[in-house]
Image 1 (cartoon, rainbow, N blue to C red):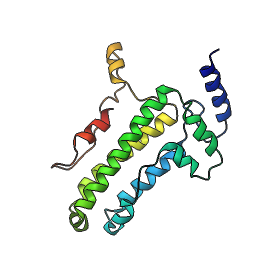
Image 2 (spheres, one colour):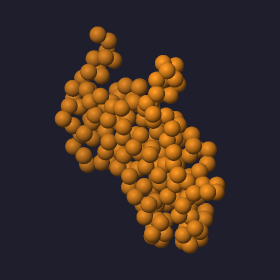
Image 3 (cartoon, one colour):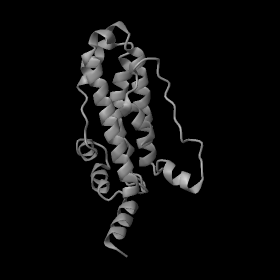
Length: 187
């Protein structure tokens, strides 16, 4: 048995009964960081004066989130992150990168057009972005819970379809979703 396999099995055994998923070795508590930002963004539709509070949100690495948290399993979450199998950790890290990017783009856009947010004319854009961010949070949650993202290219090579290949986010007419939004849906 290799040292990597032994280490993986050791951490999976340690994860049983904790907040760390024993399959992916990741913890959903990290998503609270993004859910808080999403909640603030969604509030902006009715309470645009919360923009300054939303603008304070900053990306935070997984390990830092747990080092700063008070949850009982924080040390295990920090340690297990490095042992998380690449089939989970790579799509997870990529999804988190997209989440950070989308939240940053939303902050930048809303701060640049604060007056249009105050008049409500930015609401359709805001709601479309929030829906995209929610989709990415859900994707990250699925990975954490041991569900690998659907690989369209592998399924196409095998001639399989799950019916989930296309996801539609309804956006109002106009220049609402950019290429980064579209890419985030299909990565």
